[in-house]
Amino acid sequence: MKKLHNTLIWLVITAAFIGPGTVTTALSAGARYDYALLWTLLLAVFTCFVLQEGAARIQIAGGHSLGSALRAYFHGKKNILPIALTAAILLGCAAYEAGNMLGAVAGLKLAFPVSGRQAITLLTLLAGGLLAANRFGFITNFLATLIGIMGLSLIVIAFTLDHPGGQLADGLFLPVVPTGAEILVLGLIGTTVVPYNLFLGSRLAFDQEIRNMRTGIAIATVTGGLITAGLILIGAQISAPFTFEKAVDALNIIVGSWGGAVFSFGLFAAGFTSAITAPWAAAITYKTTVAPQHEKRSYFMVWFGVLLTGFVFGVSGVQPVPMIILAQAANGMILPFLSFAILLLSNNKILMKNHANGLSANIAMLAVMWITTTLGLLSFVRAVYRISGSGAAISFALLTAIELTALVISVATGIYVHRYRFRNSKKN
Image (cartoon, rainbow, N blue to C red; front, side, top):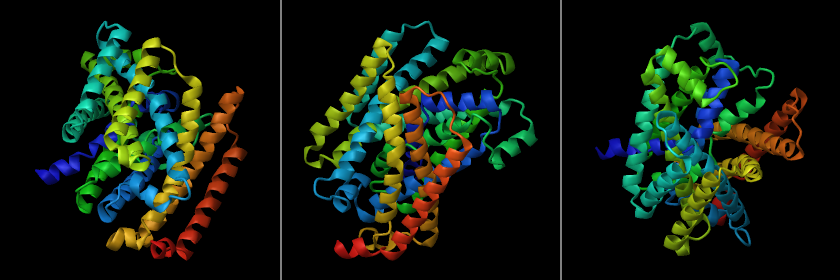
């Protein structure tokens, strides 16, 4: 039973990245391009698994959480790298918290005639109560159960619908980017590979065995991929432009009223679980990376601040657009740095002992470096476009230049790791 629990507890990672943003992005992808973007989920699941496994292995083999490992091995003069990474993650969690709350309320409103402000107040109190209790086991069990029910329900709906097999296979195994779909491709991968999940996952790995950890992360990432795929399949039944109301109406017609009800619950669960995991992960990141000496106080202050930010913006109905743009760019750009840090840490034999990276793990992590560096550069370009007010799509030439730049960076990183693999080990 303990092994089963230690495996299923990783569904918290699924709960963290399946939020209203994922629901909206996946449904929009299906509504606009049918099944053409399913292949991005294979890339997203692979990237998510490699990074989560690396962060968790550092905890299990090295006895360091990802935050404390960054603080110990990338300290510099004033812990600049850990502080910068933590600041970007806290900004992202705070910026997205209002969206999480509003997504949960949108799910409730689809099923019940509730007041938005009253619902946000109630959900904030529930989330705050769970976090204030500080009972790690109860929170993880609650989140894993809720996301399990939600995920299974949405997957059942998705595969109840009729889908042309040929188009499904083409969408899954032929990587094509339709004209104008670049942002959705970025969104589908970016909503799966979430920086704060790496710190949350490192905490989940405490007192686990590597085999169970890998099984649990595989289950969590594949489950998240299946849920997102199911949302794309549901979206393919909706005419663009997508709205939540259209999704409910279409499901009520195609599969019956239970389909719309399950979708409403799924949207609520996605928002509420993310509204808990965002402040929770922010607090874990801060206390392990920046302020371990004030663990209890910093834990409370950070999760409370993130939750309060979401409540204020949610109740006011004002979306913090500039903050969200900055957070998207910052979180996208820190992924390559986290990938680089995890790659170096997992090659440090003093830290990792007998569980340092082998050749296959290094190849996988370098492939992930290329993916995350591409995402980071695209996030930066997208933020510049939005701040400048440009509505232009990212051109094929610019996209190719970004991918080649990311490839050069990844190859250079591989050479660095090969030549200096044990340098940090000797220093420490």
